[in-house]
Amino acid sequence: MGDRGSIEATGSNLSPTSTLPRYPSGTTLQIQVENRERDLEIYLSVLVISASGDIDILYPAEWVAPEEAARIDPNNTLTVPRPDDRFELTVQGSSGFPEVLILTSTEPLRTALQGLQAIARSRNVARGAFRLRDDEAVDILGFILGDLNQISRSLRDDGTVVVPTDAIAYETSVMAVLSAVLEVGG
Image (spheres, rainbow, N blue to C red):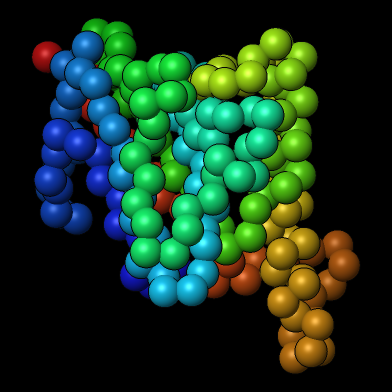
């Protein structure tokens, strides 16, 4: 997505060639995403995959109106978690390598957000982070790919590129994903 956003985990300034950031258990982190577009809103989702493979949905954390919560207006910055999200992003455990996935898109990931909203509603969660269970992670990842496919195909209505119907279209200008692996340990 070019220079549409800058992402940082508070507490670490890393170059692309540095080693993994090491955080002791109990460290509180924040993720900051800046939308540098002049006239384009972007949409944010943040997931954490634990060292044991569990997936936690950190953002959006407003499940009554997740599309609105996910939106970052042009020339604005969003810090996750927000003060009203009712959770802190705290490193836990004695050792391991959790992964933070930060997804930004030029359109809301409607199907994925609706799936997450339904899961949150079934657990009586109106606001806050929650962990996916059983096959929910596979379902949500399928919804993300479906949303990406739909958004990408909607941009291709001029007929310049034909994507077979049994393939997933992926227009690289509509989504960016940053994967940050953290080392937990003393």
